[in-house]
Length: 488
Image (cartoon, rainbow, N blue to C red):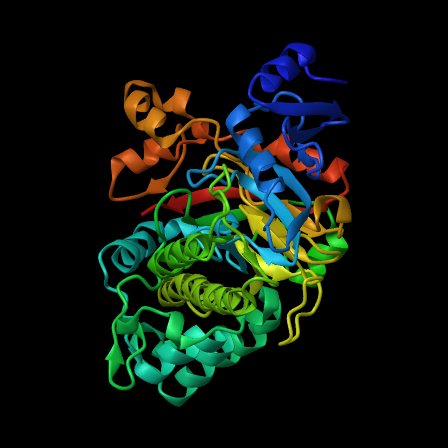
């Protein structure tokens, strides 16, 4: 079945400079003036909006090349696809050869998802909900958490991620985490994508966070962040793949913890730095790309490619730690209020990262390939995948199938259909029911955040999931119903 008024839609997109075809829920897109660029593909089921701006951004991304050497091999987008503020659409995935595109990751480096399950019934949780929420509001909103670290610990987390932080904390525990179960944290490393560790370097971190000695008090660490980032308490409502759920320790009726956050100000610092460096490194005498997406070429600037990957990894390590600490604050408060609960990790995976399509040695070559995801997550065969709905809708635990047609990827959520500006301007005059907020338990210090992030701002999650299941990108393992959501 094809969308209604398809021909009219295709003509409208053509007026935007796009050549677009449609087949089996998938749009193929090229720029009119670049017929030799690879066609970018968007999986978008009928009924979800087609946004010309996002299509143009994806076509521009597929058209990126470097005059000295480097090209896009494949570009696609997941069904939560929508325009991005920095020229790259959210939900984009791009495979490059001989070059990388820092702007394709942007500043929210290693934004990602983390999920735990808790052997605690919803009724038991609700009995002491108020006390628990007040403690968490202190940690998340009022700064009662203590993330003080030694200089050694801070340097280790930037360079090595979770293993580095854990080793340093075992030597000298500090702050709120002196009561953490470090043996449990060590066993959970295998449930983090890339073991929560990339090849970072302290030289890319903000100077004030990596002193040679003394203590570091980082006001940004273990914070949720703005936008669509959240911490949510959920209940496992339904298990669909019992064997996989059992292997992951997931059962119906359990509570679950889900976290969506990233590298915060560190990512903004490093991402902004490298957008500027990529532009400054552009070949003299060559016109700027119309899209203003500046790649770094292995042939032209191998050292810059290597440095960027190291800098991105540094921010990614911080993102892994930020999610771990947000979860650990939850786990510590659960134990304080409800007794000795284990709350094991199911999985932690990134969204915004550049990752090697093949192993990269120190000697880069023009044949090296990378996959860069912007608001999309890895979905390799048998790998856990976490896709949240809005705070009024179901979230999903899934397992990847490793589909090469979509670059081994899946969506990172439902995707916005209304901007925050539109919601903040008009939403206040709408009813709770119209915004989808009726019955939603949102904990925030800013009422406008409830409106900006209301369920009405997002696409329905079910068709987004069903399209990816039908395309054999993922399989559903369990469905999670929101109980309460923390929004900064």
